[in-house]
Length: 201
Image (cartoon, rainbow, N blue to C red):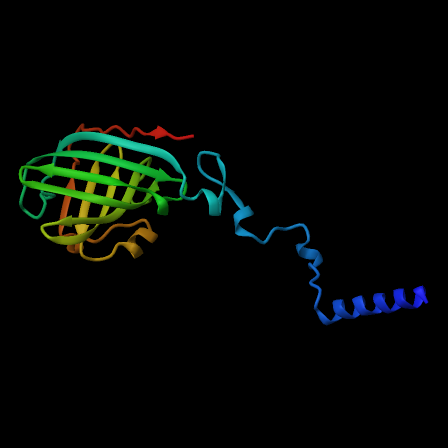
């Protein structure tokens, strides 16, 4: 009698497996994890980090201050030709640039503009060599603009536009000149800027 009950139970279990009621992991996936939280990548500094959990973690902190004379023609819409600009840059660069935050502040005379950082990128292709780029929004003269920002040892560039930067940012490019409502460029002979940041561990 016990053998008959055991045989019935085995037949019932086999029936459930065949009908799909008990899930069976395919052989090709038995040694893989399909969860994105377990996938890791290697970033440029060599850290291995978890994509889902660590994207927002801060890896570098930028605190930069100084001044420069604007490059001729990059005079904030004709308002500050030859002016000396003060700048203050505070960025927390996340493992994934899309989670970076911070502020970028430029001022001269009565002109005072602060960009709110929404994302960053290192080694932005539009400028060769080591640099940091940022994008976000800025309120200026009662209008909210988009901004793009580039910083390297040889120059600083900052521009505002009413045109979203998304497609330009995706290709590591910048707005054409006609789309820049206001802009600054520090490029003058023999001027250098500190490309200095604190590495967060």
